[in-house]
Length: 313
Image (cartoon, rainbow, N blue to C red; front, side, top):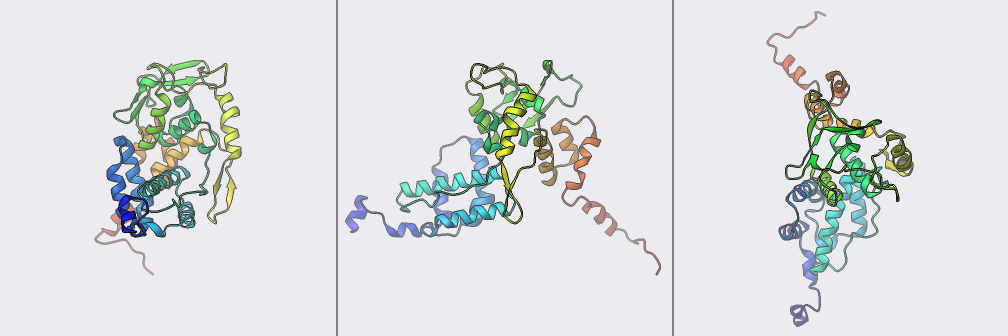
């Protein structure tokens, strides 16, 4: 039997005793991917994968364990796209373990994953909406984006043009709407795949209907043919785990969602104003109630008073 192990004709059952964290470290060192992809994957693994699986033996992880992990992420409020990225990474780790005879079968099979609006869209519109949710661009800014406005090396894009009913127009140079916007790694990944075949001066997002492909997008048609059908088929999980239909939010909700995420993560209202190109600070202030520990600084200042004001009984 030892001879068979040495020849590779049999799997060493002791290999499955390897801790997940050890196998992950070997797998990570062997990966060949772009630096920005590596950064995004590292964040996903740190936040969602290793905290749960680090101490598990590889052989002990079952399909049901993986499904339970997914359910736990849903109940914590982790977004569908973040869950899918974490699951895809776990699946890659497990496939590599099968290929190296660490385990016999991957537990990542027939797993139910949460669906989102983005999942219901064809690839070009999925990329467009990812960009909308993570950058807060207005629909007209998304539809007016040109390939040469994307700086792939710096993971940035520049908002200059906007798609209007009368055509593509540049924002005035004095407008706050003309701005630079950072791109998260996974959004840049999707965007790079989408723009690869495009000419430098081409619009990034155009019509895809056969016989009419490549034309400037029309807001009304895009909503009717793309956005509303995706909304109809999408769902989310409530606090009790029940699957619920997504309300009929308009495309502008992508911009509101972006602002809410940023504020809840502690980004200042002034930064949000600049990033989203709000002309008025009053527009940004609607998100003030979402700021974590919004009153903490004020309360701390009051506590530092040498003689706090009091009322007599």
